Length: 418
Image 1 (tube, rainbow, N blue to C red):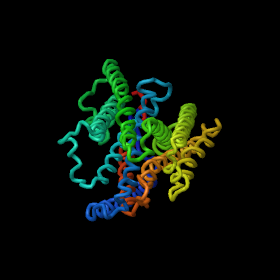
Image 2: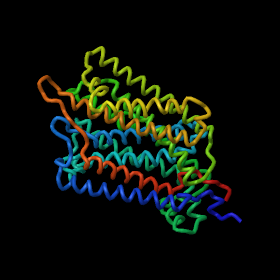
Image 3: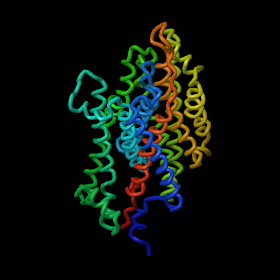
Image 4: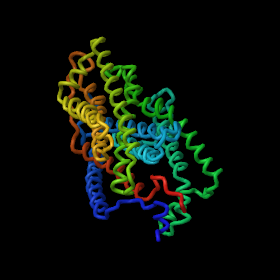
């Protein structure tokens, strides 16, 4: 006779205990490395980095804007189900929302590690500067995270109630706490959840586009001392590349969680739909990048572009951004048989996720390497071991939070036969 958990379809977590042990062991090692690198950063200050007065922003800022974009993109993917009611997308909306929350937490950790005075991270909330775009961004981030948490709550509340009422283990007790006392399973209660999910999704669209990631693009676009950033297309390019990375991440997570956790059948029609959307957004991203290059050619502001394509970090443009972010995934997404093959789509999704990292590094580093006026020295930046170590540790924090959440939360809609 099937157990209650089996009837509910509620058996989150790794299907293989050896895989679970190996994964947590790897995360543990990376977290230890990150903790040691963070201690060096605190003890030695900015002397532990390769940042300078010429290149004051580096890997941490690149990863910050990367994860802000990843969050905004994942959230916008969730709206395909919660706002636009696209068929089949309800299977991925919880994963997308949870990934969006974690990405923002990771992004803010990168902001924190980059602060000259890390102990003063709370100052923007006590001493507001209403004429500062950065001050508005910080407040928008907090509002956005609260909105995402609210959306995730309304998305999973009914399943949390099911688990709390039918599962006797500690998972049931945890689910009972997370319901926040709302235990009704009436049609009216579920309709209320759906209405609030839609309302928050509608509210979140302009917040994500114009304030969270578009606003991040504005921070660069208004920096007129760097011609490469002073482009009206920058906020748009930020949003498009965010959607690309978010769509790729959610597609990869959809397959990985079903292969490694739930062992549920993969909806290949949904996978094909996600792959087509991803291919379309990649082509739009490449097109806008090309338009931005044409603007630079017409305005004779080519020095930064020459540095990007032929300088010390040219590999980031050609191999990571163009190769892994555009060409390889487009090849994998070009045929229907490949789009319906789960592990091929994992490879395509993860390739894009890594490729967009190259986009962010190209946005941050090369414009700072080029001198702002004739006679000033060229910058020479490469992240130090402390910068790489802290970055790996912060990313491992995000992976740990996601893994724990995926083991304990109903991120896949449960069966209702009980």
